[in-house]
Amino acid sequence: MFAKHLRYLQQEGWTTVLFRDLQNAQSLPEKSVVITFDDGYEDNYPGAFLPLMALGMKATWFIATDCIGGHAHWLGKPSTQTRMLTAERLLEMHAAGMEIASHTCSHPDLSLLSSDQQQFELSKAKAVLEDLLSTQVGSLAYPFGRFNSDSITIAEQTGYSMACTTRPGWFDSEPNPYLVRRIAIFSGDSASTLARKLSFADNDVSWKKMTRYYANRVWDKLRHTS
Ligand SMILES: [Zn+2]
Image (cartoon, rainbow, N blue to C red; front, side, top):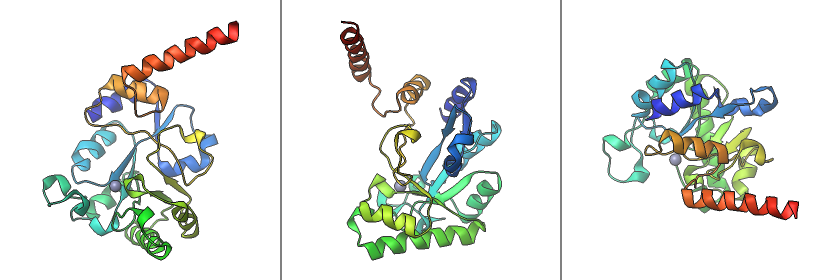
């Protein structure tokens, strides 16, 4: 399904860019899309990295550094589904042009931590990845999409240039670079659901909501012409 999504993006003329490329968004092609993965599950290697490589496309992975080569502890008992990418895989993906970025160390809900604890999570994860990849890491995704006003300040203070949330919307609809929006694509989403999510920059593209959207548009039009 992911390979199908990629072929759809390619057919429609979308260019994949990295999350960090958004710092110079003006220089990007108009139909640019950033594909992001949170956590860094081992199955992302065959399921996403290899299909991306086959089509010459790229993506950004947000990695919880304590879990590299281990398990996603927040998902409960370890299983094949909770297994995370190893350092060797991350190095290979980085060398192939993928962006490996920060998702903190231990994948906490940042909004529940003190500012000292947040500082530790953000700065250590950055240092661990920079050490592993021998490159600067300036991109962050908040675990569970949860953060508070401290998180934004600390992300900036600890040297990140951008951070993404799980709030839906276009990149350019949000002026704060530490509150970048994105839409969620699930394994069950068909290519046509992906197409609707892309056109509306929204997670809810049920026909009920779409019908409401078009009804409102017609209503607006009627009001403006009357
Ligand atoms: Zn996560």
